[in-house]
Each structure stands twice: as structure tokens, then as C-alpha cells.
Image (spheres, rainbow, N blue to C red):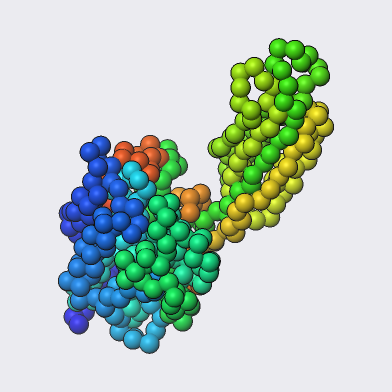
Length: 412
């Protein structure tokens, strides 16, 4: 291999953005959105194209038992644990060009640059396409060893079983424990992603250095009152479940607006009997609360429970608080954050530190190795929609940061 200065390497921006457009043409909808549901015909076509690109780069390509596509660009030291990057290429029913796919294609562009300059790092680079991130995250969960072993848990909305789904993409449910990886396999994982939020754009920053992926707690809150006639029941004699529920929503909003980086949302509500002439007797609602600190989440939830007890007394209702989901925060390693920030400085790109409030495959990878994430802006914070947009220049900037970050980590 010839000697070349890696500090000045840049991606081929035109080539990167052309690959983004090519992949986005698979599953294109009339409204310019993209539909590539995991395991669908469109997903299979996209997976085939990505594997073709990997093979053209002379990468070692394999599909593990969870259907993850793993392309390996060998390093100088074949026994050293690899550096990994990547994301997913499946979409929501009407997604955009960038969510997930951008991270995969930027990873392949990094390999293209290294290959055409005849450069191999000390460590191999793996580009991973994770299976079904938008649904079950079964691909990254298999790598972290956290797959639920009941196949019914992964049955698709159309009734298709997970055994059939994984067989379609080259996986094998019966052998899924073999997909698990560890720190001896992967030294670090860096995921490049569009922000899917408005922070970078509102701050005028070009790159987000992610401190971690927030922990998420989800609850089902039920409020039991007494249904009664809306015309004949005096106001002071009512046990109105919806009035109590409205106060719960305000309490959640108050908790979300206390000092800190947390967010708290009531996004779903059902009212019974849901009739114009009946005082509501029952309300069921969701609570989603997220933060980088588990201790802070515990403190906020303790405060909220106190509020709910007070609301129940003053409204003469019963309020129940039942947990549905508990995901711990996944913190990015400081040395990876430092490598990303230094890459930004060397590239004269502005950056800021922020948490990821959305879930990513990186949070599962953090269970088995050191993790970091790079964000680029999303126009108006839009994602999971046909209007999702990150400019070609912004895509190039993020890919250059990924390239230089992997080069730095490859020397550790």
C-alpha cells in the first residue's frame, strides 16, 4: 500500500449523494416519500443493491442469523477488533431519503475513499446494515444479545412470523444467538445519522456530537371516575375522569419543563364512554418520558406520582400508573466524542454537544462496545416523512467527519 496523508482525505460528495438518490429510488412513493418496510420486496431490493456495492469494493460480505448485512474492509491487523459503522435501510410507511440509509451509504463512501487511496487502517472497518430498525430493532438487539426468545413477540402486523421474515433476508431464527458480538469483535461503533429534530438547524451548527441516547420510560395511566348524565349531575357532585386526566396532562407538561434536558409527552388518550351527554367515567392515556440520566428520570417520576396523588384526591378519582417500557440511557464514550469534535475542528465545521432523544441501533451496540454518534441537521426537524431533507452539502460534511473520526479511532 502506498503512503498517503490521511488527515487531508475527504469523501467524494457527488458520489455519496448519487448513492443516496439511487437507494431512495427503491420504494419511491408518488408523494416523493420512500416506503421500504422491513422484509418487503422493496427492502429485499435495497439490500441486494447495498451488497452489490460492498462486493464491488471487495469487502468481505456476510449475513448473520438476524439478517444483518455486514461488509468488512480488512485492516492491517487481522486479529484486532474492528471499527464498525452503519445504520438501517428499512423505512416507516412513508419515510424520506436519509433516515438510516445515510449512515449506511456514508460508511460505504468511507471505504471507497480508503480503497481508492490504497489505505488500510490498523483495524478492519465493518459497515453494518441492521435488520428492521423501524420495527423491532431485531438486528441490533441480536448483536447485543437482547432478543426476546418468544417468536410471537416479533410477529408482523400482517401476521407473518419472524421465522419466515428472517429467511427472506438470509437470516435464521433458530440460530439467532449466533449473531451476538462482543468487544473482542468490535472495538467501537460510530453511527452517522440525520438529527430528526430541530436543534442543530435552530442553533446554526453543522454537526452534532452526541453525548448519548436518552433513556425512555413509557407508562399507561388510567383514571377512573364515575360516568353520569351530563345534564342532571351537578358540577360539584361529579367525579369527572376527563377533568382529572386534563390535570394529569398539565402535570406531565410541567415536569417536562423543569430544568434539565428531559422531554415528557402524553401522546395518546382514550375516553369512555366518549359521548357528548355523558360525564366521562374512564380515561386511559400514555406517558413517554426521556432523559440521559436514569437518576433524573427517577426523580421526575417521583415528583409526577406526588402530583397524581394530589389530583386523584381533589377530583375524587382513582389514578393508576402502569409501566410499559423501560430503556436505560446509552452514553457515548468520551474518547469517541473527542475524536468527533477534533475531526470537526480540523474540517472547520461548527459543532455542539447534544443528546439523541430518538432510538437508534447505536443504543444496542453500546451494550457490547464503545459507542458514538454524529448528527447532521434535518430541515425544520422533519423526519419519518416525505419532506425529510438534509442538503447535499450537509451530507458531505457529516460523511467527512465520519471518515476522519474512523481514521482517528483506527490509530487507537
